[in-house]
Length: 263
Ligand code: 2AM
Ligand code: CA
Ligand code: CA
Ligand code: CA
Image (cartoon, rainbow, N blue to C red; front, side, top):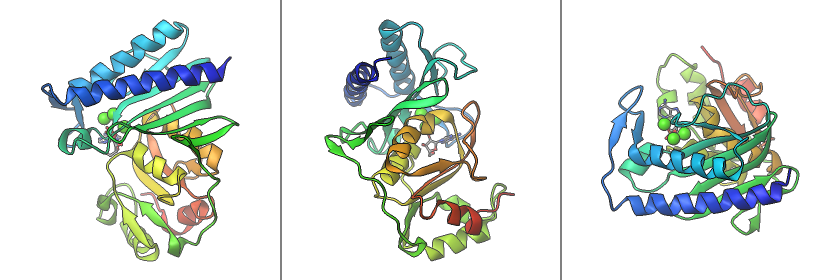
């Protein structure tokens, strides 16, 4: 398989989709809720996913496609070539802020991540990687992550996890927040992953993500030495939803051991 050729195709498709999304701000957004009041989808999320499906089917009809909005066929295995697509990651930011939302795409073959993309649509910034060849932020190569102490770390985590909840012992998260140098919450999992792989954050933790939130990001992670697992330290479950942490390798296990206690 010619990954350079697929990479070129993927980038062109992502840049074109980005332009269509930016242009869409001049039309009406139709906003609906899915599982609850903070789980949004718009006509542009769906149209962008359909755009990717049509492009990929024209490129190679044998490739399978998993997309968040379910606009393609049902895929229940990662055998063969599979695209994992989130057409807009951070839909609430898209709707509310008109910025800080990403297109993120992973290309997998037999479950192995080969190509990964996180595209900041409004800034037109691309983070990407080709397995075994390295990772880039636009034209600059991303460096391997350098070791640091937990006291120096800036981590991405949603404020709700420092309040009593059904997923995680929040007292330990309070400890973590008091130990690290700072916390941030950007509202787009892919953006937080892009920041970890480029050293702008040192870890990002989420209690529930889906394969399309992290597919592209995990390919980039591997190239810079970031470690991405679920909160048990195991492989993320790519055919379901799972907890998630991506971190600088020097603090990944330490966070799991000292600060994470799932309920
Ligand atoms: P989304 O915008 O593509 O839905 C913050 O909400 C982050 O968590 C976003 O990256 C969002 O992706 C993701 N997320 C995953 N599952 C979600 C859910 N059920 N409701 C809201 N956000 C979800
Ligand atoms: Ca969503
Ligand atoms: Ca998402
Ligand atoms: Ca989405």
